[in-house]
Length: 214
Picture 1 (spheres, one colour):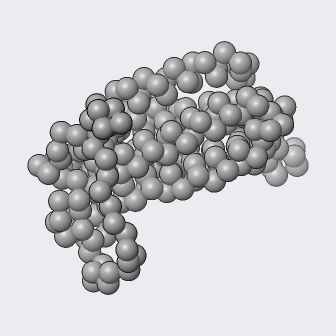
Picture 2 (cartoon, helix red, strand yellow):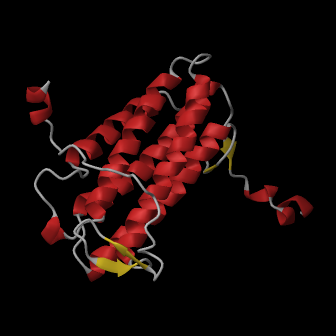
């Protein structure tokens, strides 16, 4: 077992959360992984805080997805993906919470391997889907809507990391991963409705109040 662990890409976390509140953030600052104190509204904090939001939303989606597995066993595929992505997002948060000078070689992060895996999963699910002839709206199933909510927050996280990169060094793979993940969540949302037999909610401009009046 020790030999297997030694081959892992990332270091095993050493965390002891014995007391959750510390009062050290009461003045509006928080600590980075390297110990530096920074304002809580700084872009770096905003970046990994928003990644944490995506993770929480995927936690909701994974619970909903799990509720469908017994009736629709194919949903186990998506459930496994969502649970893996939650770990990847925490890895991403770890690297965003660390200044580049403090990053150690085996620190958790996202890599091109995670990006490529998302692309493979999108391609596989897209084979089951019909081409879109209109934009889609969140809905049809609760799971679809939850995945769309995660997608929109993921896009926001991507924008924040891009902004962070303009003012200080930010990992390029973070932007690529968030970009690909937001695309993947769109595909996953469509695939969920497909497997669950729910129709997609297509955008119809004339369903607006002004269009109906006409």
